[in-house]
Image (cartoon, rainbow, N blue to C red; front, side):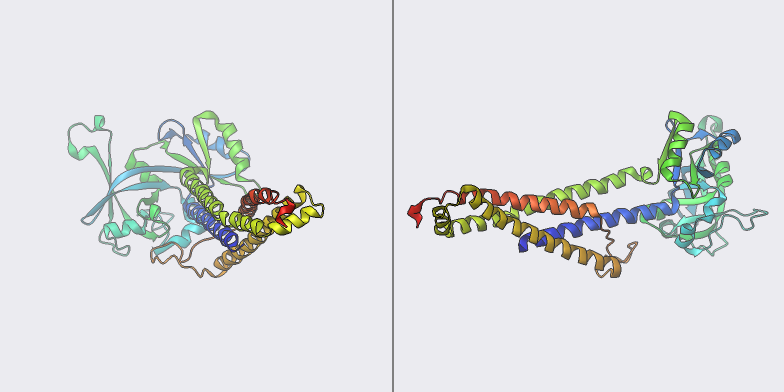
Length: 383
């Protein structure tokens, strides 16, 4: 029973950790990612007209449509340089509460003054700050951004092959390494002028009305846009990463199931030795009129006691440990640079159900052979 209980407890804990990691990733991505994202099926950009935006705004459940321009660019600060992703966003980006909480230095702003908008500001990741050695309060150095022009229009003059513009640093955000070392958020107009996108956009971000579900609005948008656009919810925007976590979770479940199957040999040998040790008692039962079915049921019930009690103890212990980790986080990640200080965990009812079914099925299966073997001791010669 001890082996079954420990295996069950370990499986519950590991599956809960994978659930916690999946939830953590979703919460991190939702900080900057929209509820619904619209992309072109062919090409990296598409033309956006006022009529097109009005048509999207009129779709049932759509509260706001934000335009986005996103592309790679060469970035230089003082003597340091790198390639980063420039993401031009509308002013609604500044209204996100999650973004405000992610700012660790400076301010969350795109302009020195919302009315005049004389000076543009960028919001950069902490990883980019470290790479470029940026001081956000230094007004003497601006961030220089270069983007290649259309070579056919540029001719042979090297100076005309690149668009160049400067932008001051407004704030530094810290979220997750994938974002911190990659993204620079700038005003939409700044990105449009620098990257020569004119009336083209790389994506549109949709905010849904409170009374509508994301799936409902997503279905309405798909019906309105047709097959030329991809309409992605928050999970679909990072489908590969989330699918990888689910696959890893499945393989961990299978590996632990295999380990428990191997451990069930202890039950098999214990019941087999019990049948051999009690062969005289079995012979007495046969002499008293017992049948094979009755003898088999004794050993199957013994296996059931082991399996059900082990599964119950393991599930209870796993629940308690995971609950304590959720409430107090007593097991630390041990990394100073981690997003959270403790291992994230989340319990799901399906994990408990499938774990219990798997444990009971394996241990009961290990009891079948000893139960059949016990029926062979039906001779009175054994008395």
